[in-house]
Length: 374
Image 1 (tube, helix red, strand yellow):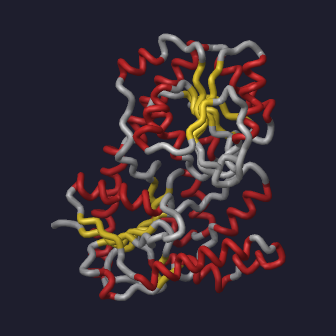
Image 2 (cartoon, one colour):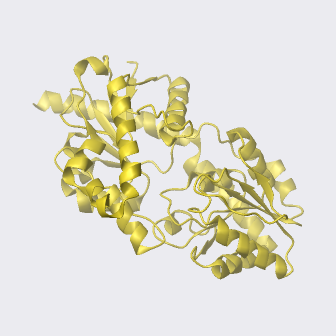
Image 3 (cartoon, one colour):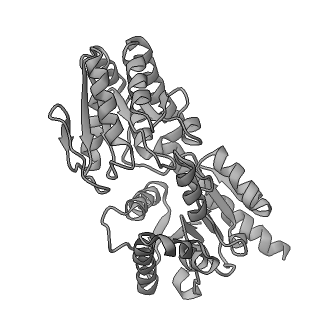
């Protein structure tokens, strides 16, 4: 039987780079490669409502004494749930969502993908994220399976919603069909000579992702005698940053071109203050790069031994991490080779795609058994 999956991904009018837009395109490719009919729900009302809520949240958050509105029960329910009509499902076998919940039980299986664990470099950031991740208790029960990225997120799901914990399934990465591991001979060639050491930063929200401290850290490492080049790919969506002349800079590159720059790099540095999974680090692992990543929980667990964890609030800590990695070239080379293997065994789209197909099939099986028992 051919599986038809309807995705509850609204169309974002405010940003061509919205995560949901690119993610849905990747899920479409999954469908093409695995013989699954993947379509997006068509609802102008849904699109307008989601964009309206986004605009409302954007402005309310900038008025401190009104921010509490964003965490009120009525707003959480409005933000994270919708009523689906039978006509909108169009004979779907499975409904898949990475944010929106259904206000009512559905006749077809409902797979919900979410990150339940709070994250961030400071207590203030973690508290804000925890509030933003809150979901209505009474409607999460209408899910059939819940996809999370890690054991940490699964544990948090169990703590917040113990009656739903049995639905949790781990898929360690988004489906990324555009990422292929670097050819092994190309990898060996890249690491024959590491002078200068090439460090790469990729991120639209450069300030939030710690680029200012990274620049100082790399500058200090260069003053210690290390030959290091730093390349930055960012459009500075979160605010402009002044760049020294010695930095290679790209405002915007295609996915393909970003991966090409990664293949030429030795280290991917992302000393971010706020990040859930950090796909850019996974992409860097595929291209045979070592990582500079945050030492805060849970992201420090995700990339343990894949490079160096640093205190992102301290340029001195970031610099020390860079110097430690770069002064042991053999260890650095070994980490980079291991990262490629970790990617192939854990994050490669062939494995991730199979996991999603198995989830769609499992959801159908579970729903079918539930109907029979009823």
